[in-house]
Image 1: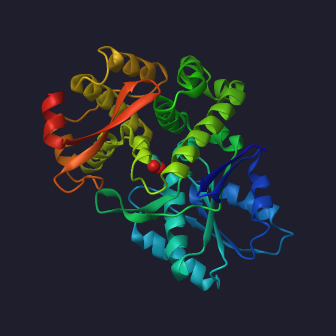
Image 2: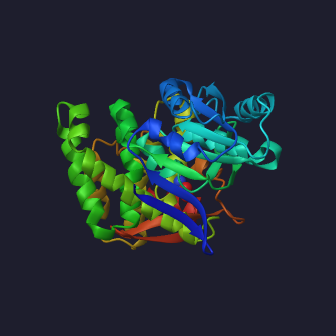
Length: 364
Ligand code: GLY
């Protein structure tokens, strides 16, 4: 069984396991004396399978099903999770096992981090997006009003259990949305030429008339790419857990993406996170050209690559409204400078601190 670790100063803080099936996740929960499951109500069946796997362990204490949407990603839901733990008699030795996409794992991880000043937690991410990004690295938290992930903490899960079985029941839209984070990771680190390989495999799936069949047919390639992407992210987080430097690279496309999502919420346009990241990476590529960090042609290449993989590449909102939203970005430093991640080439990204006004002028 493949295993990647997040290791800081020689200490393993978190492990990423590549498992075969949902039920097998239970074996990793055996050592914990109290297991509380928090599961997205849409995938309640996975919780039932883990409960079944734990049936002889005697440590399973209960399951809470939650509604996991950007609107319910709030302190209210986090408090409900804390109340569930409290009413179930959870001690500080409790393990909160979150099953779901990034919204579920972010909320359950945050609740576990504040319950009795912090108990243990682990994740079974059920979307591609959370397998390659949100489920690894320990960023947890909630939205505040229309501001995404404004309240939270970086605290590592005991482990993240990644299992290909869950991809088979994902909607194609959710699958494609997740591929944006996969491609983002390989734009940041193209070791072993994974970016080109990913574009090839994902465009093949996108062109197929039977997408579910194509995903199954390319399962092995997908598993390897997910594991490679998890390893890249685990490496970055090991070197810069609290995002003081290198980890900022993982935000490639995200400053734009968060602004796009902010506008989408206000205007009630349905844009998934990965879709916004795809549009955001195109804008980041354009900015890289304008700044002179990338050669002309990079933007059109990335735009075309994302498009053939089935991702949207055109931001539907005017630059002015994105600029206003970007000023709210929690990553803005004093003086209004934001760490923009620019693309010098595939596998080579660099950070540049810029004001929103500078970015707006360059992109006009
Ligand atoms: N999603 C970016 C990070 O985890 O740092």
